[in-house]
Length: 267
Image 1 (cartoon, rainbow, N blue to C red):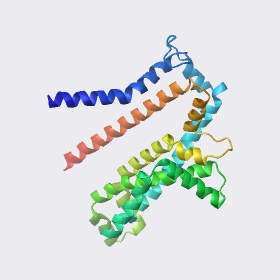
Image 2: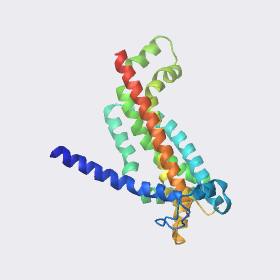
Image 3: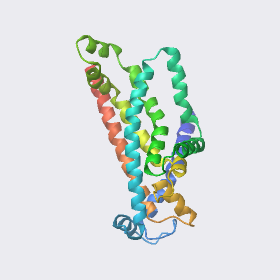
């Protein structure tokens, strides 16, 4: 009975999470302007999405989102990895203090982070636009990368790095050849998480995007919803993003499973 109840609960939870996404994907294959009105199977919305036309601004918003997310995730991964290495090599007292400080931005409400960054950029005279949005995204993504890399450092054998130094390797060479391969899974996880957070963010982006016409996907959807409806092309776009993320996660999980099997076989 306990197993039946737990499976039922899990099934209901998955239905609540994925049913809205599946509904959007299903209604992306129809010409209806209103979600829920099925007028027959059609690829017209997908054709309209890729041909541009009246929805060229949606394409620009998507490209802006991808570019900002990629830059923010790359820089956050580099900064977060270096910060994690530094935190790991601190003594226990300082390490706990810095880890607590690193957790505060994660638990801090987005609205507080957005207002703080907005006031900071205004006070130092930085013009709002691409620069402020990227800096803001790097700021709130870096702590997540730190949390992704730290477990890899705890699992790593410290003697490998010290042995490389004893054998004549420079610290940079040992870092590149010994530590980074061990930290790669955490860095990849941190990069994916930072990229996802950057794409998903709305509040921080809205406060720091300025009035120069820059739009990301989240701000475009917000402005579109305030007009009284959503652009129908958002349905196929949402479906494509969901499928791409799903395929990407399946590939990563499959590679991780193969690596674990190989490691167990070697052990």
